Each structure stands twice: as structure tokens, then as C-alpha cells.
Image (tube, rainbow, N blue to C red; front, side, top):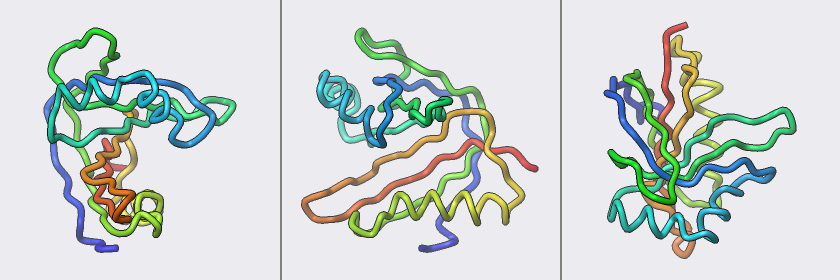
Length: 152
């Protein structure tokens, strides 16, 4: 993994719309959004932009509160919205074969190395996974992890 493949930015408030659910299994909200047509609606709104995965955290039963979303400036019938405030963000980019658990390895590196070595902690906002490319057929992915942060 390229340890220099990150940047720290400040970003103004922005809104996302999508499908939020609490599910017991990883990827469960993606299944819900595929099955109810939410992903199709998001792709029509934002052709060519990556789908996002917002992680709000885990409940007491270790179920994942997660939202599949796209950045969009207004409310959309049938989709939920969430507005991020102005914040500082660490953006880490990773790519490689899906079979090598690129996303999982990227999260591990960000949490165990990148944040602590730079004196950063996660702010109390949902983190974002940006799925720039997710190609199961060709075993390839490009992802970005966006973490709202603050200095320790």
C-alpha cells in the first residue's frame, strides 16, 4: 500500500441522499438498496459519480448503521438525506485486486497507522467509503476512505 496516498482537506458542508439501514451482516445495506431500487435511483441522479457508503457506527448488538448514498444538494422522494457540516477530512486512496481485500486492508492501515502517526482522531461524524471502481468481473477496485478528523 502506498503510504503517501492520502491528503488532508477542509470541505464545506454537503448533503447526501440514499438508503440507510441497520443490518447484522457486512454489506447488508447494499443488499437492501439493490433490492428496493434505491441504488438505481441514486445512479440516475448522479450518473458517473461514485456511490458512497456512510458508516454511522455499530449498535449494542454489533449491527451496522450504514447508508448507501450519493452526494446531492436537495431532498429526493423515497431517499433519506444526511447533511455533513464543514469539516476537516483525511482522504486515503487505495486500489488493487478485490481478492486481496483492498478495502479491509486500507481501513486497517488508516486506523492503526495513518491516523495515529499523524496525531489525528476521528471526529464524531460518519466516515465515508467512496467506491470509485468496484469491478468484480475483472477483480479490481479503486476506493477512497474519507474520515472526518480532529487533532488529538
